[in-house]
Length: 244
Figure 1 (tube, rainbow, N blue to C red):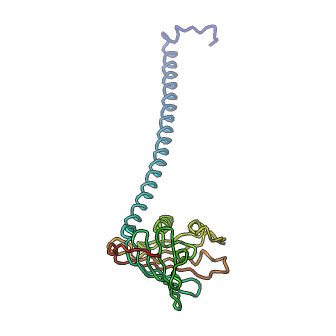
Figure 2: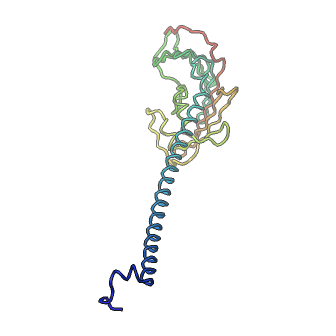
Figure 3: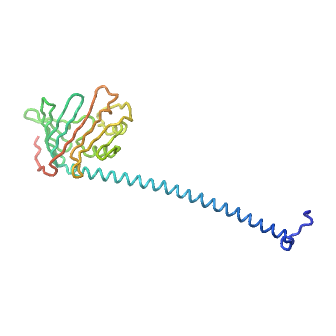
């Protein structure tokens, strides 16, 4: 049929053309429906993806908050800063033992290497050791990691990966950030692991055992560093005077 023979009235009055028109309209509607459904599915998937990412972020944040809360609860008695303590440092082939008491920011303890004994008194940032009948300025006795500082210990634990109920691991790369700035430590392998074992009674820490030997894997001056911290008599220490 030529275009000249075609007229629009045929679409209405001619059954053949009317059927074709209806099929065409249904085809167009079908195509529109498919496009609409695809757009909706795409938007839904995008929304679910965003929700999944958001939910994962919320879960991660909640896990981090819960972990920090758990660590704070473990340290709740230590954070009273009122206890007797015995800190052992296994440094190379030597053992150093600090034993004494703490009340708030005050310390009274002795340090021995098995041969000599040094008496320490400390109040806040002021630390002194007894020499004959007088006291001279000093610093708290620790190697690389200030284990006298509860905040440092908590931060190390919070930055570690828990491998079992009371066992943690921390990489050299992360642990090195807690090394006292007075030490010029160069870490060899950032991925080597160091271990932390907690002694927990009644949901509070009474001991912390740390093996930081791997931190010095590429450091000739240090062959090993292990620290064993033990706390007792929480809240039973009376205030005492510091007389330098």
